[in-house]
Image (cartoon, rainbow, N blue to C red):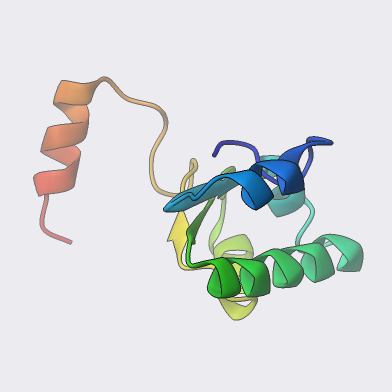
Length: 100
């Protein structure tokens, strides 16, 4: 499920469907360092993900401090400019095969 956390029907989707991965809406991640309420909402979603057996991808992760805070809150999979801009599939394959 994409953009979880901001749509009015997100919880209904979780109630009526099984998901392996839920992508957390970027507006929560953008404010995780400056808005305590965003952090609390993310903690609640992390707990929900554990109880319902789905992983969370957090989008709009743009810097190390933001990523570290999200990790502290229980998030472990990230998407955003901190790692890479959007790239074509062929470039992604090269990027993914690079040694870190």
